[in-house]
Amino acid sequence: MAHSKQPRRSVLVAARLITAVVSLAGAEAMLWFGGYPRWWAMDPQWGTTPPEYQSDSILGWQNRAGRFNLAWPDLSGTTLVTNWSQGRRATAEQEPAGDAANRPRVFSFGDSFVQGYQLSDSETLPWIVQQRHPDVVVSNFGTGDYATYQSYLAIKRWVHGPASVYHLFNAFHEGRNAADPNWLRVYKKTRGGFFFPYAELVAGDLQARKSPGNLVWYLSRRLRTVAMIQDYRDILESYGRVRNKRQLTQTLLMKMNQIVRTEAGKFTVILFDMSPPERKDYRKFLESQSISFVDCDRPELQDKKLRLPDGHPSQALNELLAQWIEPLQVVMDYSPEARSVPERR
Image (cartoon, rainbow, N blue to C red; front, side, top):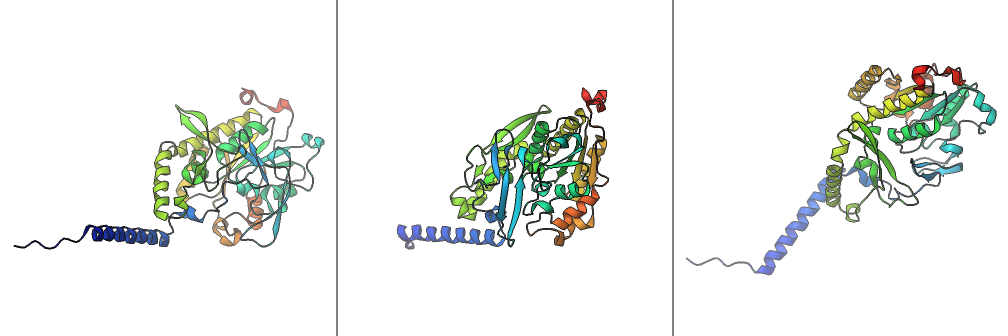
């Protein structure tokens, strides 16, 4: 029987190349239609330093003192951002003078939700609280892209003496605390001393860590299939620490409460954006630790009309939140004698 004629080698190579190209194009199309990876929609400048921030040797970054008129791609006009000393955003027309030390203090810590991302000064939650309570001094330590861990570090730095301390907590802080890939990913290499601080639990103790960020590969910016490879590579690299993010976050909340109570203050957690199971779990945890909290489990929280296009709270939602946290926790006795023995240990 005669053997069938074999195709030339060049034809086989060409056929395999065509098959590979078609397969790659098909995979790219499927990923494109599926919207994968979501981080392809990131700002290509992510990782550069906005003018309203400066590097910090402990926090990674903090708000830079000054006045900034900022423009946003999805909003018309500009917003006025005024930052005071100590990395605080303004809560009044003028930064408090020295005599304000004799008035009760209310500190707000958290991420861009507290800071007031895309909002002018007077539209932020701490500003609204200050207007409702002119007898106290409200400080806004909220900073864009912060994790609970950075708020913990900021509380260690700035809470000295009795104060009422609020921490607005979103469930996505868990990933940031453990430096999940979504938080570390940058399109531009960080410079000028900026870094991502996070923590790991080692034998029950907090261990400080730093990362310069995970730079998106050149080909990952152009091919979704390569981006998928990098995505899974980053997931595997971070799995060991991210799997303990809930325990890590709860440990941070306990330590934040301990710091504030040691200073004879009051610590309150604001439970904001989270799923029903997450909310239930954190309510149970905070109750078990006797940590005060405000649960924002209200239908208004799901109203898109009360959110900016990217999901941040609008002024209207901040007005509601200012009502939800009433009665405002205030430390009335500012003297050192107000501290109880257990709190001073």
